[in-house]
Length: 407
Image (cartoon, rainbow, N blue to C red; front, side, top):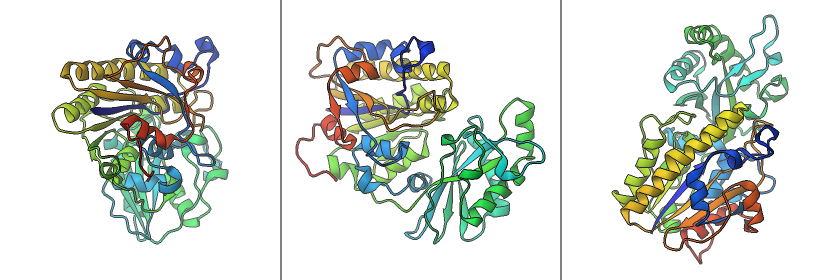
């Protein structure tokens, strides 16, 4: 039996009036998921433990089968693992977004507003140049920067302290003063980064082309070095992660899973969906893997942008360019397989950030197709009556692990 997860990050949402009161998942044209749902179990699952913040970090740990209450030590340490940062036990890792702040003349730094957490989904190549400009001025013991992917980078603070810092996507459009670090050095580095970046040639060119300038470092997601038990030892399955996002790669590295490198996988709306799908098929059919996790970031990014049209497009791409071709290829192979499709958390268009609400799942088993009338969406998943209150236990159900102590 082969096992594959298709994770549509932030895919769940709320009913939207302009979509006739439907959610994007319900309104989108998803013929592959519609056909699959008739043969599948659907239901709701709570991926965010009560009292924990609804991040992709805690949620994806749950989906992969790790109880966040036991194993979550911060978001950035997981990302640091994926880019090979040599973390010590006394280090603090932080996410360093390169964001877009407002650029009004004559106002203090703290009065600026955060306009875009991703600087228009800036390319890794351009953002690396900008981060190196920051590093030339600010990379000194005990603070060290590391290049990640697109706007997502890493700061290591040697012998530092964990400070509760605000994710930039949670405060879009707001004045930044209430959300700046209490630590004086972190505050000053953010302020200095704005002065370093605002007039950089890359940003001058971006403004000329109508793109958001990537003009400030924003620190958040602080935490300590994680320690996850091996996924293979825990489940008996050899697994591979297929994602453009350092967080997911880091979870995989921490869990001892392999990470596929897919050319053109960006984490954006126009990522290489076909390449990700083929990587999963090759891993399962040709390369001896038992488990593949295909992570699609685009629905979440479009939710943060507040774009109904682009979120619909992201969901339709997931259906047409991942779920459809994936099931066709697995069916042709003759391999028995189980498929789990779900979001990690909602990212509602209305608020442009994550919530902790439960999310719908679809579970298909090629060896025992069901006969149902439902489609895969939030409303019908609720009506199914199936509910899993502890999200990390869904993986055991999916992998048909009947009895074990939960790690």
